[in-house]
Image (cartoon, rainbow, N blue to C red; front, side, top):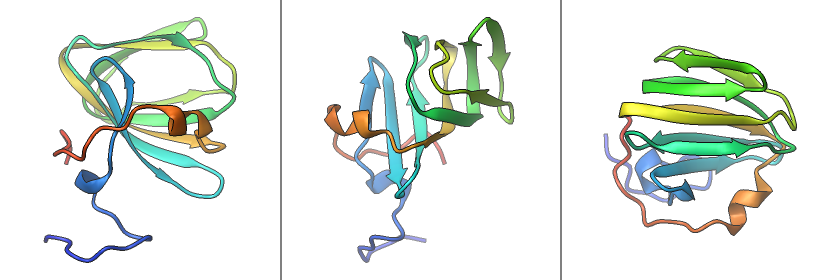
Length: 127
């Protein structure tokens, strides 16, 4: 079903301008007052270098596979696998030849993303 009317409460994923997080990694974010939720598309063989942030991060894999290192633990994750990243814990990620799509929730809101480049809306990999 196509959505034709504009709403501040409801928005189809394809209409959200993605944030460019890194080369081959984009995030379509929805923000509330206290948290951010994002669907993140990672191209094949994409690499998210080690970083950390104040935000607590919870997520799960929707499609593809992704190798994540959180602190000293490293795992290959597949659709349905979840992860939890405490505040300020270093982490990184890399996808394989099929790329990946993940859903992430951050608390508090990702204020730093507001400074990132935004791309024009496009068709996401998922759904």
